[in-house]
Image (cartoon, rainbow, N blue to C red; front, side, top):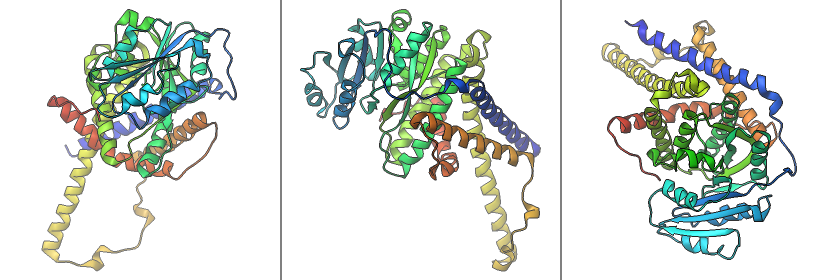
Amino acid sequence: MENIPVFVFQIFVFLSVYVQVFLFVTFLENRGGLTVRRGGTVLSKYPFVTVIVPAYNEERTIYKTVRSLLGINYPKEKLKIFLVDDGSTDGTWRALCRFSHYSNIKLFRKENGGKHTALNLGLEHTETEFFGCLDADSIAHPESLVRIMSYFEEDASLMAVAPSVTIYNPKNFIQNIQTVEYYMGVYMKKMFGFMGAINVTPGPLTIFRKKVFDDLGPYRHAHNTEDMEIAYRMQKNYYKIGHCHDAYVYTSSPSTLEKLFRQRLRWIYGFINNTIDYRDVIFKKRYGNFAFFTLPTGIISVIAVGFLFGKIIYNVGAFLHSKFIYFQTAGLNLSAMTGAFDPYFFSAKTPFFLMAIIYFIVLFSILFGRKISEDRWKFSPEMLYYFPIFALIAPFWILKAVWNTIFSVVPVWK
Protein backbone atom coordinates (compact mmCIF):
# COMPACT_ATOMS: atom_id res chain seq x y z
CA MET A 1 0.00 0.00 0.00
CA GLU A 2 2.85 2.39 0.73
CA ASN A 3 4.00 2.15 -2.89
CA ILE A 4 0.64 3.27 -4.33
CA PRO A 5 1.28 7.03 -3.93
CA VAL A 6 4.71 6.61 -5.52
CA PHE A 7 3.18 4.68 -8.41
CA VAL A 8 0.47 7.32 -8.93
CA PHE A 9 3.09 10.09 -8.82
CA GLN A 10 5.16 8.35 -11.48
CA ILE A 11 2.07 8.01 -13.69
CA PHE A 12 1.42 11.75 -13.46
CA VAL A 13 5.07 12.52 -14.25
CA PHE A 14 4.93 10.23 -17.28
CA LEU A 15 1.72 11.83 -18.52
CA SER A 16 3.23 15.30 -18.09
CA VAL A 17 6.25 14.31 -20.15
CA TYR A 18 3.99 12.75 -22.78
CA VAL A 19 1.94 15.95 -23.14
CA GLN A 20 5.00 18.20 -23.42
CA VAL A 21 6.74 15.89 -25.90
CA PHE A 22 3.54 15.60 -27.95
CA LEU A 23 3.31 19.39 -28.19
CA PHE A 24 7.00 19.63 -29.06
CA VAL A 25 6.64 17.05 -31.85
CA THR A 26 3.65 19.03 -33.14
CA PHE A 27 5.88 22.09 -33.21
CA LEU A 28 8.62 20.26 -35.13
CA GLU A 29 6.11 18.99 -37.69
CA ASN A 30 4.62 22.44 -38.30
CA ARG A 31 7.50 24.85 -37.67
CA GLY A 32 7.47 25.92 -41.32
CA GLY A 33 4.13 27.66 -40.73
CA LEU A 34 5.35 29.81 -37.86
CA THR A 35 6.87 32.78 -39.65
CA VAL A 36 6.03 36.22 -38.28
CA ARG A 37 4.91 38.77 -40.85
CA ARG A 38 6.43 42.21 -40.78
CA GLY A 39 4.78 45.33 -42.15
CA GLY A 40 1.31 45.57 -43.65
CA THR A 41 -0.79 42.64 -44.86
CA VAL A 42 -2.86 43.02 -48.03
CA LEU A 43 -6.00 41.00 -48.75
CA SER A 44 -7.51 40.32 -52.15
CA LYS A 45 -10.89 41.14 -50.63
CA TYR A 46 -11.87 42.95 -47.42
CA PRO A 47 -15.07 41.48 -45.97
CA PHE A 48 -17.32 43.49 -43.65
CA VAL A 49 -16.53 42.84 -39.98
CA THR A 50 -18.40 43.83 -36.82
CA VAL A 51 -16.46 44.05 -33.56
CA ILE A 52 -18.37 44.36 -30.29
CA VAL A 53 -16.80 45.90 -27.19
CA PRO A 54 -18.84 44.84 -24.13
CA ALA A 55 -18.10 47.00 -21.09
CA TYR A 56 -19.03 46.92 -17.44
CA ASN A 57 -17.33 49.53 -15.22
CA GLU A 58 -14.41 49.97 -17.60
CA GLU A 59 -14.12 53.77 -17.67
CA ARG A 60 -10.37 53.58 -17.01
CA THR A 61 -9.55 51.34 -19.97
CA ILE A 62 -12.33 51.70 -22.55
CA TYR A 63 -10.89 54.78 -24.27
CA LYS A 64 -7.61 53.08 -25.20
CA THR A 65 -9.51 49.97 -26.32
CA VAL A 66 -11.73 51.87 -28.73
CA ARG A 67 -8.84 54.02 -29.99
CA SER A 68 -6.92 50.85 -30.81
CA LEU A 69 -9.85 49.64 -32.93
CA LEU A 70 -10.04 52.95 -34.73
CA GLY A 71 -6.33 52.69 -35.48
CA ILE A 72 -6.54 49.22 -37.01
CA ASN A 73 -5.22 48.77 -40.55
CA TYR A 74 -8.55 47.83 -42.11
CA PRO A 75 -10.85 49.85 -44.40
CA LYS A 76 -12.98 51.98 -42.08
CA GLU A 77 -16.09 51.52 -44.18
CA LYS A 78 -15.73 47.73 -43.77
CA LEU A 79 -15.31 47.77 -39.98
CA LYS A 80 -18.37 48.26 -37.78
CA ILE A 81 -17.79 48.86 -34.06
CA PHE A 82 -20.53 48.28 -31.47
CA LEU A 83 -19.92 49.65 -27.97
CA VAL A 84 -22.20 48.04 -25.39
CA ASP A 85 -22.50 49.40 -21.85
CA ASP A 86 -23.75 46.48 -19.76
CA GLY A 87 -25.31 48.53 -16.96
CA SER A 88 -22.13 50.15 -15.68
CA THR A 89 -22.28 52.09 -12.41
CA ASP A 90 -19.23 54.27 -13.10
CA GLY A 91 -18.41 56.66 -15.94
CA THR A 92 -18.23 54.03 -18.70
CA TRP A 93 -21.23 55.42 -20.61
CA ARG A 94 -19.77 58.92 -20.62
CA ALA A 95 -16.51 57.51 -21.96
CA LEU A 96 -18.37 55.67 -24.74
CA CYS A 97 -20.32 58.78 -25.71
CA ARG A 98 -17.04 60.41 -26.72
CA PHE A 99 -17.14 58.17 -29.80
CA SER A 100 -20.76 58.77 -30.77
CA HIS A 101 -19.81 60.99 -33.74
CA TYR A 102 -17.88 58.25 -35.58
CA SER A 103 -19.87 56.96 -38.53
CA ASN A 104 -18.77 53.35 -38.08
CA ILE A 105 -19.47 53.24 -34.31
CA LYS A 106 -22.83 52.44 -32.76
CA LEU A 107 -23.58 52.75 -29.03
CA PHE A 108 -25.85 50.54 -26.93
CA ARG A 109 -26.86 50.79 -23.29
CA LYS A 110 -28.63 48.06 -21.33
CA GLU A 111 -29.29 46.76 -17.85
CA ASN A 112 -26.54 44.61 -16.39
CA GLY A 113 -26.97 41.01 -17.43
CA GLY A 114 -23.45 39.70 -17.91
CA LYS A 115 -20.99 39.74 -20.77
CA HIS A 116 -22.83 37.10 -22.79
CA THR A 117 -25.99 39.25 -22.86
CA ALA A 118 -23.99 42.27 -24.06
CA LEU A 119 -22.48 40.19 -26.86
CA ASN A 120 -25.87 38.79 -27.83
CA LEU A 121 -27.31 42.31 -28.04
CA GLY A 122 -24.56 43.16 -30.49
CA LEU A 123 -25.19 39.94 -32.40
CA GLU A 124 -28.84 40.84 -32.84
CA HIS A 125 -27.80 43.99 -34.71
CA THR A 126 -24.92 42.45 -36.68
CA GLU A 127 -25.46 42.21 -40.43
CA THR A 128 -21.87 41.52 -41.51
CA GLU A 129 -20.40 38.19 -42.56
CA PHE A 130 -17.80 38.27 -39.77
CA PHE A 131 -18.22 39.06 -36.10
CA GLY A 132 -15.86 39.42 -33.16
CA CYS A 133 -15.41 40.77 -29.67
CA LEU A 134 -12.72 42.90 -28.09
CA ASP A 135 -12.68 42.98 -24.29
CA ALA A 136 -12.83 46.49 -22.86
CA ASP A 137 -9.49 46.06 -21.09
CA SER A 138 -7.58 45.03 -24.24
CA ILE A 139 -5.71 46.81 -27.03
CA ALA A 140 -5.49 45.51 -30.60
CA HIS A 141 -2.29 45.73 -32.63
CA PRO A 142 -2.82 47.74 -35.87
CA GLU A 143 -2.19 44.64 -38.03
CA SER A 144 -4.15 42.18 -35.87
CA LEU A 145 -7.48 42.16 -37.72
CA VAL A 146 -6.12 42.04 -41.27
CA ARG A 147 -3.80 39.18 -40.32
CA ILE A 148 -6.70 37.26 -38.80
CA MET A 149 -8.80 37.86 -41.91
CA SER A 150 -5.98 36.54 -44.09
CA TYR A 151 -6.50 33.14 -42.45
CA PHE A 152 -10.16 33.15 -43.53
CA GLU A 153 -9.07 34.12 -47.04
CA GLU A 154 -6.62 31.22 -47.20
CA ASP A 155 -8.93 28.59 -45.68
CA ALA A 156 -12.65 28.75 -46.41
CA SER A 157 -13.33 25.96 -43.90
CA LEU A 158 -12.21 28.08 -40.93
CA MET A 159 -15.14 29.24 -38.79
CA ALA A 160 -13.19 31.18 -36.15
CA VAL A 161 -9.65 32.51 -35.72
CA ALA A 162 -8.13 33.43 -32.36
CA PRO A 163 -5.25 35.92 -31.90
CA SER A 164 -2.15 35.79 -29.70
CA VAL A 165 -2.93 37.48 -26.40
CA THR A 166 -0.14 38.90 -24.23
CA ILE A 167 0.06 41.17 -21.19
CA TYR A 168 -0.11 44.93 -21.68
CA ASN A 169 2.51 46.97 -19.84
CA PRO A 170 3.28 44.68 -16.85
CA LYS A 171 4.40 46.75 -13.86
CA ASN A 172 4.95 44.44 -10.91
CA PHE A 173 6.07 40.95 -9.94
CA ILE A 174 2.58 39.40 -10.23
CA GLN A 175 2.09 40.78 -13.74
CA ASN A 176 5.58 39.79 -14.89
CA ILE A 177 4.89 36.20 -13.85
CA GLN A 178 1.66 36.26 -15.85
CA THR A 179 3.55 37.58 -18.88
CA VAL A 180 5.59 34.38 -18.93
CA GLU A 181 2.43 32.32 -18.61
CA TYR A 182 0.86 34.13 -21.57
CA TYR A 183 3.95 33.45 -23.70
CA MET A 184 3.51 29.76 -23.01
CA GLY A 185 -0.20 30.13 -23.74
CA VAL A 186 0.55 31.54 -27.20
CA TYR A 187 2.75 28.53 -27.96
CA MET A 188 0.16 26.05 -26.72
CA LYS A 189 -2.71 27.77 -28.53
CA LYS A 190 -0.78 27.55 -31.79
CA MET A 191 -0.04 23.86 -31.26
CA PHE A 192 -3.70 23.21 -30.42
CA GLY A 193 -4.57 25.09 -33.61
CA PHE A 194 -2.36 22.78 -35.65
CA MET A 195 -4.12 19.81 -34.00
CA GLY A 196 -7.63 21.22 -34.47
CA ALA A 197 -8.05 21.10 -30.70
CA ILE A 198 -8.56 24.70 -29.49
CA ASN A 199 -10.89 24.86 -26.47
CA VAL A 200 -11.14 28.64 -25.91
CA THR A 201 -11.91 31.46 -28.34
CA PRO A 202 -10.69 34.35 -26.13
CA GLY A 203 -12.57 37.61 -25.76
CA PRO A 204 -9.69 39.75 -27.03
CA LEU A 205 -10.49 39.81 -30.78
CA THR A 206 -11.36 36.27 -31.77
CA ILE A 207 -13.17 36.64 -35.10
CA PHE A 208 -16.00 34.29 -36.16
CA ARG A 209 -17.99 33.76 -39.26
CA LYS A 210 -21.43 34.93 -38.16
CA LYS A 211 -22.73 31.65 -39.56
CA VAL A 212 -21.45 30.04 -36.34
CA PHE A 213 -24.07 31.89 -34.28
CA ASP A 214 -26.74 31.65 -36.97
CA ASP A 215 -26.33 27.86 -36.91
CA LEU A 216 -25.50 27.15 -33.27
CA GLY A 217 -27.32 29.93 -31.45
CA PRO A 218 -26.09 32.88 -29.37
CA TYR A 219 -23.62 33.03 -26.50
CA ARG A 220 -24.57 31.31 -23.25
CA HIS A 221 -23.80 32.20 -19.64
CA ALA A 222 -21.59 29.10 -19.52
CA HIS A 223 -20.39 29.54 -15.94
CA ASN A 224 -19.05 33.03 -16.73
CA THR A 225 -16.79 31.59 -19.45
CA GLU A 226 -18.81 32.11 -22.62
CA ASP A 227 -15.64 32.23 -24.74
CA MET A 228 -14.84 28.68 -23.67
CA GLU A 229 -18.32 27.27 -24.12
CA ILE A 230 -18.70 28.53 -27.68
CA ALA A 231 -15.41 26.81 -28.56
CA TYR A 232 -16.68 23.55 -27.02
CA ARG A 233 -19.93 23.94 -28.98
CA MET A 234 -18.04 24.54 -32.20
CA GLN A 235 -15.82 21.51 -31.65
CA LYS A 236 -18.86 19.33 -30.98
CA ASN A 237 -20.38 20.50 -34.25
CA TYR A 238 -17.15 20.09 -36.27
CA TYR A 239 -16.60 23.83 -36.79
CA LYS A 240 -12.92 24.51 -37.42
CA ILE A 241 -11.04 26.97 -35.16
CA GLY A 242 -7.65 28.41 -36.11
CA HIS A 243 -5.02 30.53 -34.38
CA CYS A 244 -3.22 33.49 -35.96
CA HIS A 245 0.03 33.66 -34.00
CA ASP A 246 1.12 37.05 -35.36
CA ALA A 247 -2.18 38.82 -34.67
CA TYR A 248 -1.35 40.51 -31.38
CA VAL A 249 -3.76 41.72 -28.73
CA TYR A 250 -2.57 43.14 -25.42
CA THR A 251 -4.73 42.64 -22.37
CA SER A 252 -4.68 44.05 -18.85
CA SER A 253 -3.80 41.58 -16.13
CA PRO A 254 -4.54 41.31 -12.40
CA SER A 255 -2.08 43.38 -10.41
CA THR A 256 -2.53 41.65 -7.05
CA LEU A 257 -2.56 38.06 -5.88
CA GLU A 258 -6.17 38.42 -4.74
CA LYS A 259 -7.34 39.59 -8.17
CA LEU A 260 -5.29 36.88 -9.87
CA PHE A 261 -6.88 34.27 -7.61
CA ARG A 262 -10.41 35.43 -8.50
CA GLN A 263 -9.65 35.45 -12.22
CA ARG A 264 -8.08 31.99 -12.29
CA LEU A 265 -10.77 30.57 -10.03
CA ARG A 266 -13.36 31.66 -12.61
CA TRP A 267 -11.32 30.21 -15.47
CA ILE A 268 -10.74 26.81 -13.84
CA TYR A 269 -14.32 26.65 -12.56
CA GLY A 270 -15.46 27.36 -16.12
CA PHE A 271 -13.20 24.64 -17.53
CA ILE A 272 -14.42 22.04 -15.04
CA ASN A 273 -18.09 22.82 -15.51
CA ASN A 274 -18.02 23.27 -19.28
CA THR A 275 -16.21 19.95 -19.51
CA ILE A 276 -18.90 18.35 -17.36
CA ASP A 277 -21.55 19.88 -19.63
CA TYR A 278 -19.79 18.46 -22.70
CA ARG A 279 -18.61 15.22 -21.11
CA ASP A 280 -20.24 13.21 -23.90
CA VAL A 281 -17.49 14.28 -26.35
CA ILE A 282 -14.54 12.97 -24.29
CA PHE A 283 -12.70 10.09 -25.96
CA LYS A 284 -15.11 10.07 -28.90
CA LYS A 285 -13.07 9.49 -32.03
CA ARG A 286 -15.20 11.74 -34.24
CA TYR A 287 -14.20 14.79 -32.18
CA GLY A 288 -10.49 14.28 -32.82
CA ASN A 289 -7.70 15.75 -30.71
CA PHE A 290 -10.13 17.99 -28.83
CA ALA A 291 -11.69 14.87 -27.31
CA PHE A 292 -8.53 12.76 -27.05
CA PHE A 293 -5.94 15.35 -26.05
CA THR A 294 -7.15 18.81 -24.98
CA LEU A 295 -9.92 17.81 -22.58
CA PRO A 296 -8.17 14.76 -21.05
CA THR A 297 -5.01 16.83 -20.55
CA GLY A 298 -6.97 19.46 -18.64
CA ILE A 299 -8.80 16.87 -16.54
CA ILE A 300 -5.58 15.05 -15.68
CA SER A 301 -3.94 18.35 -14.74
CA VAL A 302 -6.70 19.15 -12.25
CA ILE A 303 -6.51 15.66 -10.70
CA ALA A 304 -2.70 15.71 -10.63
CA VAL A 305 -2.59 19.07 -8.86
CA GLY A 306 -4.97 17.80 -6.19
CA PHE A 307 -2.94 14.63 -5.69
CA LEU A 308 0.46 16.33 -5.61
CA PHE A 309 -0.75 19.09 -3.31
CA GLY A 310 -2.14 16.49 -0.91
CA LYS A 311 1.10 14.52 -1.11
CA ILE A 312 3.15 17.61 -0.28
CA ILE A 313 0.94 18.46 2.70
CA TYR A 314 1.18 14.88 3.93
CA ASN A 315 4.97 14.77 3.54
CA VAL A 316 5.45 18.10 5.31
CA GLY A 317 3.17 16.95 8.12
CA ALA A 318 5.03 13.63 8.43
CA PHE A 319 8.39 15.45 8.50
CA LEU A 320 7.29 17.87 11.20
CA HIS A 321 5.78 15.06 13.23
CA SER A 322 9.00 13.01 13.07
CA LYS A 323 11.05 16.05 14.17
CA PHE A 324 8.64 16.68 17.00
CA ILE A 325 9.05 13.09 18.21
CA TYR A 326 12.83 13.39 17.83
CA PHE A 327 13.00 16.58 19.90
CA GLN A 328 10.79 15.04 22.57
CA THR A 329 13.12 12.03 22.80
CA ALA A 330 16.61 13.50 22.30
CA GLY A 331 16.10 17.18 22.97
CA LEU A 332 17.28 20.03 20.77
CA ASN A 333 20.66 19.09 19.27
CA LEU A 334 21.63 21.54 16.53
CA SER A 335 24.94 19.81 15.78
CA ALA A 336 23.10 16.68 14.77
CA MET A 337 21.05 18.67 12.28
CA THR A 338 24.03 20.07 10.35
CA GLY A 339 26.29 18.40 7.84
CA ALA A 340 28.08 18.83 4.53
CA PHE A 341 26.32 18.18 1.23
CA ASP A 342 27.12 14.75 -0.18
CA PRO A 343 26.29 14.20 -3.86
CA TYR A 344 25.99 10.50 -3.10
CA PHE A 345 22.57 11.23 -1.65
CA PHE A 346 21.45 13.27 -4.69
CA SER A 347 18.32 11.64 -6.17
CA ALA A 348 19.04 9.90 -9.46
CA LYS A 349 15.65 8.25 -9.74
CA THR A 350 13.85 8.35 -13.08
CA PRO A 351 11.11 10.83 -11.96
CA PHE A 352 13.76 13.46 -11.24
CA PHE A 353 15.11 13.33 -14.76
CA LEU A 354 11.60 13.28 -16.21
CA MET A 355 10.78 16.41 -14.22
CA ALA A 356 13.93 18.01 -15.62
CA ILE A 357 12.76 17.15 -19.15
CA ILE A 358 9.37 18.74 -18.42
CA TYR A 359 11.01 21.88 -17.08
CA PHE A 360 13.25 22.35 -20.12
CA ILE A 361 10.44 21.72 -22.62
CA VAL A 362 8.24 24.21 -20.73
CA LEU A 363 11.11 26.71 -20.82
CA PHE A 364 11.37 26.18 -24.58
CA SER A 365 7.63 26.74 -25.00
CA ILE A 366 7.90 30.02 -23.08
CA LEU A 367 10.86 31.20 -25.17
CA PHE A 368 9.20 30.24 -28.43
CA GLY A 369 5.91 31.79 -27.32
CA ARG A 370 7.82 35.02 -26.81
CA LYS A 371 9.48 34.59 -30.19
CA ILE A 372 6.17 34.44 -32.06
CA SER A 373 4.61 37.09 -29.79
CA GLU A 374 7.38 39.66 -30.13
CA ASP A 375 9.45 38.29 -33.02
CA ARG A 376 12.52 37.97 -30.85
CA TRP A 377 14.33 35.41 -28.75
CA LYS A 378 14.86 36.91 -25.32
CA PHE A 379 15.39 35.28 -21.95
CA SER A 380 14.20 36.99 -18.78
CA PRO A 381 14.69 35.91 -15.13
CA GLU A 382 10.98 35.39 -14.47
CA MET A 383 11.07 32.51 -16.97
CA LEU A 384 13.05 30.52 -14.41
CA TYR A 385 10.92 31.18 -11.36
CA TYR A 386 7.51 31.17 -13.11
CA PHE A 387 7.30 27.38 -12.96
CA PRO A 388 8.03 26.85 -9.22
CA ILE A 389 5.97 29.89 -8.15
CA PHE A 390 2.89 28.91 -10.10
CA ALA A 391 3.35 25.35 -8.88
CA LEU A 392 2.96 26.73 -5.34
CA ILE A 393 -0.01 29.07 -5.87
CA ALA A 394 -2.02 27.43 -8.68
CA PRO A 395 -3.23 24.50 -6.50
CA PHE A 396 -5.19 26.94 -4.33
CA TRP A 397 -7.46 28.22 -7.10
CA ILE A 398 -7.68 24.78 -8.74
CA LEU A 399 -8.77 23.10 -5.51
CA LYS A 400 -11.13 25.98 -4.75
CA ALA A 401 -12.69 25.54 -8.21
CA VAL A 402 -13.18 21.83 -7.49
CA TRP A 403 -14.73 22.71 -4.11
CA ASN A 404 -17.05 25.27 -5.72
CA THR A 405 -18.10 22.73 -8.33
CA ILE A 406 -18.90 20.08 -5.74
CA PHE A 407 -20.91 22.49 -3.59
CA SER A 408 -22.40 24.55 -6.45
CA VAL A 409 -20.74 27.82 -5.45
CA VAL A 410 -20.46 30.17 -8.44
CA PRO A 411 -17.34 32.40 -8.42
CA VAL A 412 -17.83 36.14 -8.72
CA TRP A 413 -16.96 37.76 -12.06
CA LYS A 414 -14.38 40.22 -10.67
